[in-house]
Image (cartoon, rainbow, N blue to C red):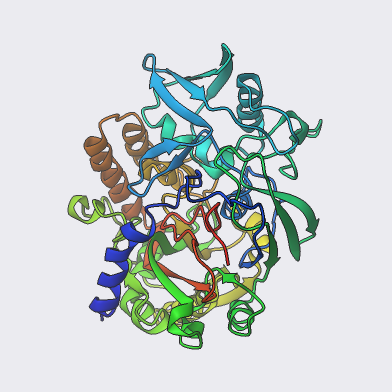
Length: 498
């Protein structure tokens, strides 16, 4: 069964219109003339998992609240656009020069070339490394009064895209302590400044009046971290919230039509299979697990048509992918499960995932596996997943979130040295294909190389793409200017108001 064509087509057609202004830069209509404006009440699905460090899972939390930004951003077409850098040029194969705009940090200091170079240097030294720097070595140095020169160990044709990553946000010198951590509270450059954090429960943000893009129309944000999707939807419906991200599909019908927005995204929900240890180290059993999964049921029944059945690592919102997709390479023949016990894990911050995992569990058991399902909040699950403690993992992952470059997720999630390699995949053929894609500069050829690498990865059965998602955002009827972003990097900006 396919998702209802009318809904899918509508989402895909609307995406470019809705995302034309999602980059966080300000404009002439974004500033508040009188300095007033109401506060926004916003609920996010994921609480801080790493004390608001920009180097890991909290990076997009910070960018979605308008706190942090990098040298570049992504425009609606997925190209690099100016942010803290107003322009850039490639000096040679390994060196780029970025020209900074005049801007200030939220602690009152100026954004200088030395400060930017130091911030990027701290990111390169972070452990674990930010996903955007997976397989990349770079150095940054101040160059005159407005320039920053960035040199990579190997040619990096997509460096401007890479620097748009939320995990490479620029922070002031005060953000960095002796412990190597980065604290974005009062040290970022975005239109909103964090003034108070209440653990994993809530945060208070005030407008940063000196923002280079103009003052935000809202005077601040009262953010709540609500992992329960039903609770987020209920709070929006009863008027306690202005914006609720990631409304569960089961709750969409409870909201007035005027209060919900569905947007095609580059997010794919996948079943990751542990190739490094446990029963699924056997490629024949991974092949049996892949053959057991019926993705059409997940798209139509669990997601109620707000998704496409899994076709690959990249879904329909990555518009060029389908025409370039290749058959998986080197798949093993399916073995016969003989009651092997496997642990299947997922998280409940995205409410559809436990239901997806339950359906997958039933399908795997029908094929002959014995499945133990474990569901936790993401922050209590991530470290175990990265350590390979589960045999299988249901993950919703935005394929372009880290850099906007389609090759980046292949390097971070499926290469031997990848920093987010939950599948524990270490395959020489995959690494060679990924390395070839990383070295390709021409856009069309890079896309071809990415799809060749995807074919190698799918052939390993380390990942079974389940569905390509649309996202539902709850928006109060009085709220305007919410940033509906297919890359899920932004949500609130200078023009968001009520």
